[in-house]
Length: 234
Image 1 (tube, helix red, strand yellow):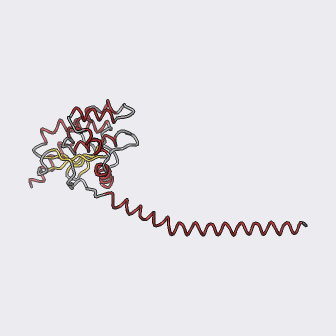
Image 2 (cartoon, rainbow, N blue to C red):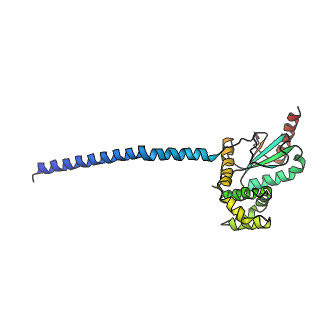
């Protein structure tokens, strides 16, 4: 075979390979258009419709956890992470202030687990939320903050949280089923989505009648509550 004939055959082989690649690409595009795209659309629609509603800091949801009388003029909405040390400090501050605030304000707790820095925070929120199904949310909430230093250092927390549930005489089988339930998971997820939409970027985030406190210190909380009570009184 002469050199010219070899070059011709090589050229034909390259053209044939290019033609096959083009046909393969067209098949992939058709597959993407007729199969992948509809599946992707269905996934997006499912995600959107399954997320559920979110609520701003000036709204009260039916599934919110409220401490105190919701008819009081001041609403304190706290977005917190159970493993966050600053949230434990905020909880202690709010607990100390509560006797002074209870006739003027109510507290709403919403979950905002930041798992990038607090790997057990998501599980803690699920357990607290599940305990709420047995009317013990606030008991579990308080206990998680009180024992934060203990369970935060553990590699796994489920056994520890189970022991807390037994101490509170909760139905453990029911609790574990609720921890894995879609309703509980969505509650935690939607609290976090609502917080993000409302401007929460770190925890604790404290809103008083919709006002985000830059520094939720003891004195600042008292000042803003007093201002809101005065404003409500006209």
